[in-house]
Length: 392
Ligand code: FEO
Image 1 (tube, protein in one colour):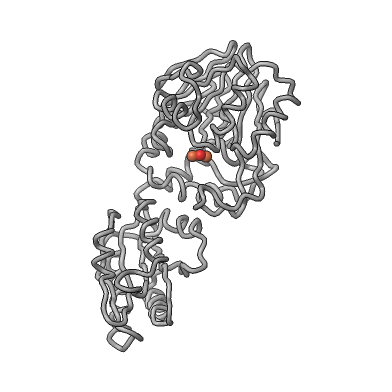
Image 2 (cartoon, protein in one colour):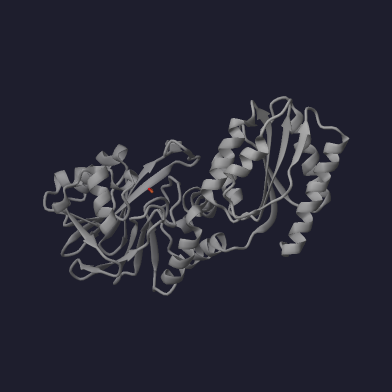
């Protein structure tokens, strides 16, 4: 665990998980991750979040090394186990400690961590809890990314503790964002995978946070921001309604027909002045494609027919795109089939994005002249739509 004093009496306690490669058994972690707790030493001692259960020993040993004899408060911003999982261990060791959480957080801590009701203090939006010379103010921020989430603001030091919000999955010995040159790539990946479905909530929270005087943003994953305005600016851009002229082409090909169609289609996109990103779904890292969805204008999913529906990898991509709810403006499909199928009906019944569906291209078997013409027409149509909407 990396322990560093980030302000007088305030310590970063980051458990680096350098070799973790998957989060929630779903999200790839090319750069590992960290679980950051923070310790505030005042008349009262507060521990801000804990760590993943796999790192509980590191946290307990570090508290011993820091000679922490007493903890009065454990702030639980969010109940997901990568932050709350070691709370029972802290409560076991520091018997006098009370957990501070939102009202719903209290319920979830009882359900998920089996923490007794009497050990938890529920706080309201705007409530202050004094630590002595300092006080923590709680800011209700549901749905970033669970419904119980709160942030906390150490008023005197102007440090905002944000748990998952503004986090990044990045294991690093450099604890400040400005020491990590690729931090905005990590932060964007994190936003895409975790926060994007809650874009409209985050817009509102940003408006509130930007009114506050904040010197440091201390998340519970990844580095700390000493220039909050930079991460605010990045988030403002990601959560805005603005898209960039870019077509994501995500495809899977079984016997080559889709591959041929996709190769033709990207040439047609080029001829129409449309930048694109190509993802072969058999090898793509879903984090990369999620990042591309943060601001791309258009998604085209290309799939062969398996039995009567989409290839399972295309179905998975479709499901994830629906779940991530990006601000994509246009969606279309390129489909091939052998003897029939209901891919388009299946896609239409699943479609949840607030995007315009552009007529798909459907070919039987190996693509013929008319199919190549249809792909050219699809690229032209997408270019026209961009012009109509003024997407540059
Ligand atoms: Fe980092 Fe939602 O837990």
